[in-house]
Length: 203
Image (cartoon, rainbow, N blue to C red; front, side, top):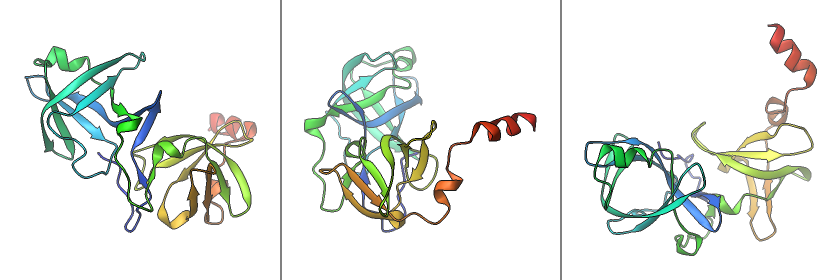
């Protein structure tokens, strides 16, 4: 399932893994008998995937290989890709869980008001004038908006929805994200204390 955005939210696009590459999708499973794969798309840029485009598959060990899109079509909420030279189920199985990337220099130009998720990593989050912590990652698929994984002074990070309703200002150049969070949200998402963890184990 591609990351969805709340109505009126035109703030975020894409995801990054690093090493000057942008991740556009993640391979979920094989699809069909001729090397096709189903992918979860991480980009809302229209027509971002086209026949003949070059992608780089980053596997879990950090290896990267170049692929060329031969065919593509939507299927049950995902995108199905057929790559040149990937012609069997066994060929396709190697790609499962790979991130499909393009070099950062090839990422699409955004309209004013949009922000790449990749530009958020390392930004400091503020709730009003209160500094919460630094964004160390973004998690998709947990709800309507991506979750910012924000590392503060506590041992465990906060998980804060990157939703239009909570945003005051996003300034990648200053590495700042200013938000207006509902009262109590940080307490709900606060890391558990050692005493709370022991109580949960007893239950």
